[in-house]
Image (cartoon, rainbow, N blue to C red; front, side, top):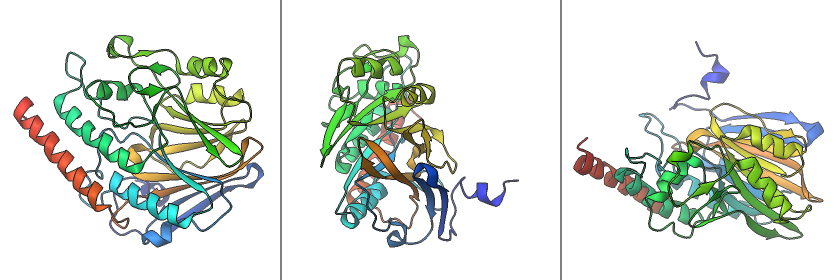
Length: 330
């Protein structure tokens, strides 16, 4: 039997109360909280002195809409859009940027290794949907490569990887934020080399970041945000060597994982399939994150869905289903 605290982290619930449970680590300047229940206005962060707010997720796997739960389904780009726009309006003194830690495309392959037709149909809509969120960086995971190989157009999305090279992928993205320079890059676990599509090449993720550092891709006083998909060991090694300042870790996390530091790097974990949206609020000083507040926001039915993205999600589902019936007869 699940104990009550753990039961709240699993499945879908129709009768949520407001639940904002803080976990404090004051010696390291970190705070974490999970926000469940209540209206949208009750879930937004109160004003603070954050310089940067990162809204993060991962592992949506080509699904624009919420999960398939029969009661109170969670997730969906339409709800992320609503929360992002409200957060921007409520946080005029800080930049609010959307990032993805990887696994955003459906990588279901044919026997030949190319993307299945229904996966490609869903991924075309996913590219369009993420474009509406205006993200700063999307980490290309090994799982995304099959999905990318089936797309003719990636819509100008800011695809990043420190160790995977291929069409439309850059090794990092740099943004100016007042006196600070913020760099976004990404790593992923590597699958079998034989399954990497022909247009792409890959090396070890940790080696990729170290090569960028050796080549002077960014400076010591840049604040480096590492998006890591299924690569916690490699990310931890880079953090311990002081090569990254913030890690957003996606690896099918489903529980109440408080923010922590690996060496001096702030480490946050993305909720699997972005059923909870991550909101990392950072105070920046002297080229590092001096303090951080990590919030996990339940994306349930209390978060209004952006109507355009909700419509796209329905269209994407119908189109993928039609392809499955006509091409694969199931």
